[in-house]
Length: 172
Image 1 (cartoon, rainbow, N blue to C red):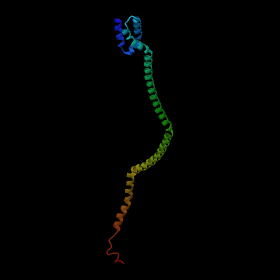
Image 2: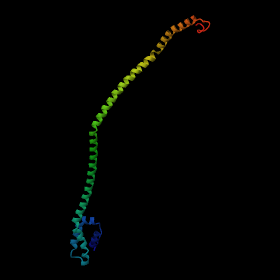
Image 3: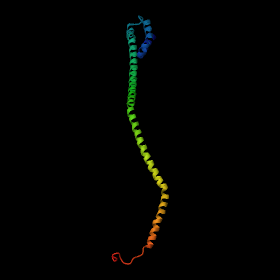
């Protein structure tokens, strides 16, 4: 009776465990074969059925595992393909940007030359203005000295001018 109880417990287990432990179940069934009443041996039919499906279940489990792995590999493949395409697009963009960069360098060099010429003109004008500023006190002094002569002449001429009685119309 304990052997029947063992078989019943084994039949109530998870099918995956039953398939893995089918060898023990088979040994127990072979020992009890012909020793059990017919109604109890009819319980053996599901066990035999389970044993018969053992290879199919193992194959199905392996297929499920293989499909899961395959799905992961396909996903990784697509991720890597996408990364490769992104990198390739960036490389093409960089390769195609060479002419644009060269043109921009040439434009900047021309702009630099123009600005250097303009800077030279500004520097020359600045130097001239600084020179004027530096020479300003001396120039003012020279002009003051030069102004003394006409001022003295004005004073001298003013002293020479005498009032003439009457008007110029009267003299005519």
